[in-house]
Image (tube, rainbow, N blue to C red; front, side, top):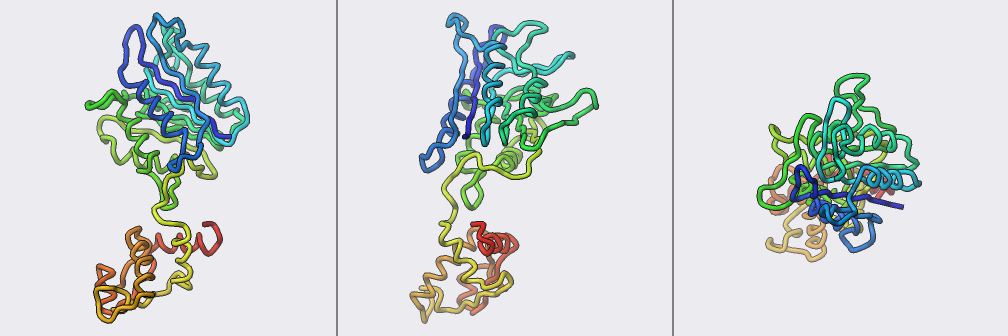
Length: 321
């Protein structure tokens, strides 16, 4: 079972926001289904309404939903929150609509306590709010030291001392817009899997190093897929790598027959070359002594697996793909 609780709050009496509901809707869309349309997470979407609606996202309501998410056994659970975050001398909070002094919202300490004691195998918490980097930090041992049980990962828009910003060109949080693109395939590996480490790396490369720094805290023994995207190469084609390369240090011989633009050409060899070119585009192999595969064929130079190619060769050899 894969569950996700997705929360977006725009309507704050003292400081309304513009993009949090859009953030939540985007995350609901991208997490609900994989690239091929198959069901991914069973998502529960909670977004704010104006004060007159009579059904605000209160401390009690949000805390109950987080408890329900983490209390039941599951393979993986995601908590996503977009809204105000607050840091006080007493603690750090996800700010709810019933915010008032000394009762700012749901305590980050309580959330991490629930996550650490949860029966869910893998818990991933994604916060697009100010001061989210405080989640998991232990004040009692000083500084930025976190205590996470195995299977818990935290991805936040900014450090504990920083603010989370919205995009200038849309009503959407900058952090969430990048997360969305990462889940849509920007952070997918060759096999099409998107995991939390890949998402963080994607976000880290795009956020300004001076103004807003994303934080990843993770204690995992395996990387679970958050979303499946279209693989960058068909698996049956990737599995041929051990056929073309009997061992990982083998140098595959090329000659002019492998390229249709060279004379003489050979149709069977051209089909092999099509596969090898896909490996080349994915940096799984490189021609020896030449920059391009065409030149290697023209000059009868071989190609060999790169370090990355040898990794996937091992994966295929050991029936891991």
